[in-house]
Length: 255
Picture (cartoon, helix red, strand yellow):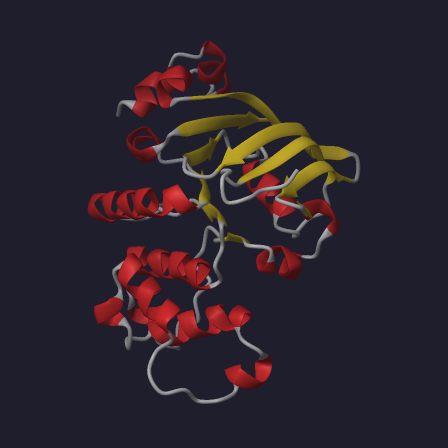
């Protein structure tokens, strides 16, 4: 599989399996994540959503096929995967709370610079950091310690840290958990702005957020892909409703 400027980027898995001492946390997953779409992963707790992302970002060992461009992700270490342009956030924000917003972005952007350049104090802010600040809406907070940011702002900072790493594939794990309604909407609009030039995959339990912003939804259950489609198609799927233990997904998506 190769990519050029005339093609959309995509990340593809075929038969992806993660085995923990005989327990298949991921069991033969086939999925394609395309550039330009907001792709959501949903499913009950234990469905394998985070484990799938762990395998694609080098945190757990997977077997089968998983590739982005010419990169065989299953043969690479996590830092190599980051350098290949595949990044992620976690359920709990992993910013350096005692450092400023700019310092967090500068450190994350260190992937672009040689170590001797990182050690040198620079005047001003690198252009790509300024651009990331503007994109995530934190320019006026750039000199504040990350630890005193609002919850949503910390999540936006994490997205900014992926931007300065030049991540072309972004896996976001429950980004809007704990956010206010306004923060959720701002996050969705941010992701919509980023989506045309990137492959964005969101693990999410907030069904209202899924309904408002998903282009395509993959439903996982017991380590497998149960179904995939638009929000309307997922709402109407009786298998999905059954997996959610009797709670109508149509109802959840329309709460």
